[in-house]
Image 1 (spheres, helix red, strand yellow):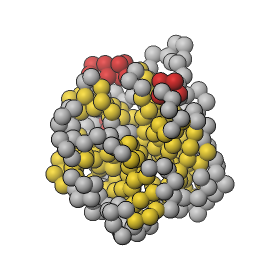
Image 2 (cartoon, rainbow, N blue to C red):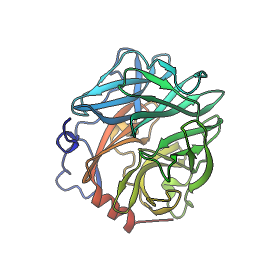
Image 3 (cartoon, one colour):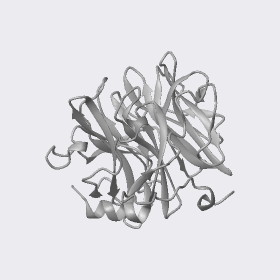
Image 4 (tube, rainbow, N blue to C red):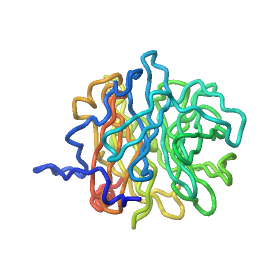
Length: 324
């Protein structure tokens, strides 16, 4: 298997750019019509797999039915996405009913790849499944009662338990939301729910004053778990989604050590400002080799973009510009 350092998608910071993170010059990497049936492809997750990468993609079709599809890439930029949605088999439950699936995340834990997504079961909740090869997928019990979104697993157990971040919500376009953590001994029964991060006061950091939600799977740094998350402000034109970063305690991740007062990335490029849902940057995956990170994000609920940064710079920026 190739080293991630050798195949990590990457582009150096543009000349004259002073930002901590910067966009890929060839964004969007996945267009809305990437497969024949799609109306939009966005808010998708990617992990290293074999000699390249695999992913689970949100593809809304031309009836705007929401579902998730598997895909593969050698370089993390050019993707072959299956034309049919994932067909799930029963995992730790026979109850695999689902009205819709969207906004997946993926991570490797111990011996398999785990997928979480917003699952339609009498309202949005957190669906869970696993795969070994991205060909066969096994659906498990939903993690929580409706209503909940943005379920993001930690890539290793915390004190012997699986851990997941989520955002309790409502059945619509939720005008509120804080990040919680929950624990499970077996990836079936979840409890010990604790509040991790709340929205900020408008005068202190307005870009994240309406609601926040976990984005990419956290990864460990020398300072703790680095989490990219989205924050939302309600403007006169509706919601505006941006990306920030937080550092959580390594052994007790319900404790936030640092959190960005300024955003790292906000809608700016045409494909982020214009689309089915304008003004959205929504991170869902982060590939990292210990020094560099490539973040995949949904843009305007229409396409997939990518941004880059050096982990050391992001951690330093988060610590030096923190609000708690």
